[in-house]
Structures are given as C-alpha cells and as structure tokens.
Length: 134
Image (cartoon, rainbow, N blue to C red; front, side, top):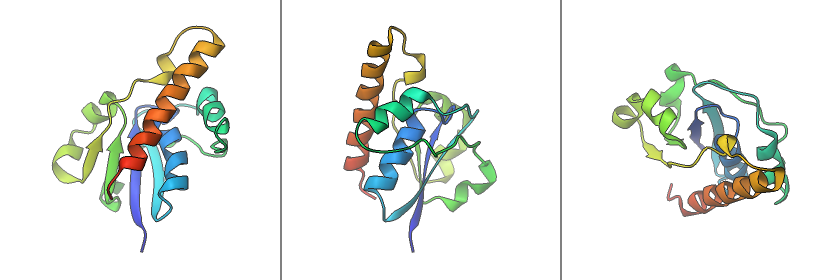
C-alpha cells in the first residue's frame, strides 16, 4: 500500500506545487499531495519553470489544508515558515520535515530575473526530494 505524503505551504501556488510535480515523478511509490494554509491560484512562473524541464503541473490546483485529515499522511513537509508557524500541531503530532525555502512569489525584477529565481528554487526543491529517505 502506498504511503501518503503532503507538501504544505502558505498559498499552495508555487513551492508546494513544484514539490508535488517532482514528487509525482520521483516518489511514485507514494501518494503525493499538496495544500496551503491560504490557497492562491497556481503561479504561472511555477508552471513555466517546471515545463522547462519537461514536467507539466498545469492541471494541478491549489487546495486548502484540512487539519482534520493530517493523520492520513505518513509524512508532511512544510516548505515555508508561515505554514510551519500556522500549523504548530505538526511538530508534536505528525512525522514532519521542514524545508525553509524562499517564496518565489515575492521575487521582483524583470521576467528573466524572476524566471531565474524560480529555477533556483525549483532546483533546490528537486535536490531535497532526491535526498529524502522515506
């Protein structure tokens, strides 16, 4: 039976969507989900940065975390301090890992600079996923 893994972020628009896309590709032995504390529309730069490496996340959607369902996950990974701070229950009750990653939605500059920033964060997420021991 596949284990359930959740990537949790604030808006479920960038980091957790990228992680979900990588998880579905590289962690196929698990059921991969993502959610947010305050879900926002998926960021177009997140879709673009993943499409650059051949992963299509355009059909993924932002979802709100259901705190009552946390026990369904064998592992929860938070990707930002905001999600960690707003879900303190994670530290005590559930198997949890925290990755403190910069919020790419807050990047500024021209389109090329923002794309480069998204690529760096995407690559950092991939590195962490490949290092997971689950």
